[in-house]
Length: 485
Image (cartoon, rainbow, N blue to C red; front, side, top):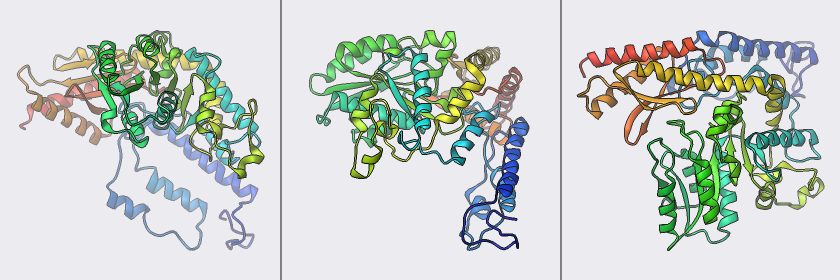
């Protein structure tokens, strides 16, 4: 019997509600599907997609006039949706910055959705507001930021970076925006450029600064650029990267903080990938200086293993978020917040807000920091192990060694190989590995050179996953190199 069927089996056209027994039955089926996903994940292809025509055939078309039973819809999900997705949580997903959620986080998301928690105002859900305040304060403490700091949960690093640049603009430029200049590493994330574009800054107002031999933003070059621009323009913000997507490098945060303090520049740190490495002693040392930032981007859906979506913007002065984003129209006067009863909708872009904090809070409370510290440290160890295996192959050149948990490299067929040949060979390695479904690595460029990269972020990844993937890369490299172009 479907969700809106009555006792006679006919569809009830007067309600969207289901009976308790039907909800329990369907709920068990959904949970079983999720458990089956986790249980069989390692056996499935990592990369899997279909062309648009095929997906249109399977999932396109107009909506039905009359409803269909949920059992049939779940069958359709199993047959037409689930098989046509790459698995970012697969233990051999080494592409981009993978996201590997947990069952606990998924259940937290299910509870938030099932209770339909609105997380915008204190009156409508004081528990949701307090959960978010608590979780963000945990992050603040981990980074070592002052008690004045605070923030809010957002969809991910892109919105967090956008929010950080809004804070920087309002704090340092005010209405004088035509000549403002933002500085970022040549390896900074594209979301920084997108955020600047959304805020109306021209391309010439985003100045990319060269990196040093370790792919970190060159502080001396930055100082020179700021001094040069200050003669005719208004330098106002430096975006430091704590975990570059291509190399995993971390900019010299303490030195950048000193420069920003000296020149009164807003320091925003994009730590979407690397920020939670602070839980590991090695990561904490690499992130020294992050506590001096004016704003920081974090992504719990990366190294805290929270299901999508979960990002965070932290501000050194929590009050600044309120000052920038608070607007109180007449229709919200009844739920106006206060200094203690905080409305999170007053501290960011969105008024309609789901409860992202519940899944983060549940997972951290369940697993505890010791376990997170272990799995983050293991990711870093596995990346170094991958580097050792790659370096052991005379035909593989490691371009950027593992700093956090990313290693970039390229297969070089022979010493006489030119860049065009190397790019062709490595592009073919990536393509064939994708087609095999065995593992996923992605490509990028480091100072113009085409590279392949492995990002070890998944809490389920083991040494054998790394060993097999490196072996497949070497075998494909040899096969491609021996074939005629």
